[in-house]
Image (cartoon, rainbow, N blue to C red; front, side):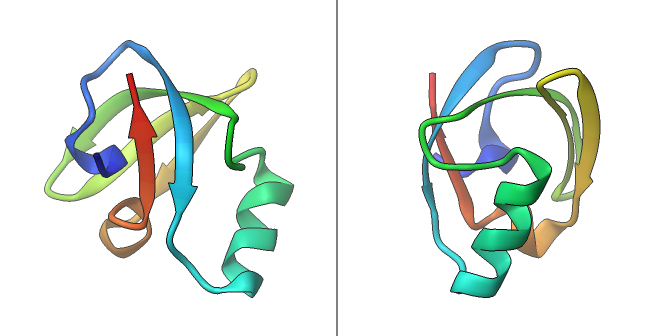
Amino acid sequence: MPIVLAPRNRELKIVRIAADDKTKKHLESLGIATNGTVTVLSSDSGSVVCKIMEGRIALDRDLSAKIFVRC
């Protein structure tokens, strides 16, 4: 499921990132990579605030629709 539809406050595993190589490399530098874990803190009208490692990151609607996770 896309991260925008994922449940809040649960650790999720990133299974796929459906973006171009440049975007994938940028996300990897931020700590968002396939087989990594993420926790959704809030989700509002498509934008998502996530906890990655010890930091928080905000993803816009377009990017959050391209990150797929599994519970």
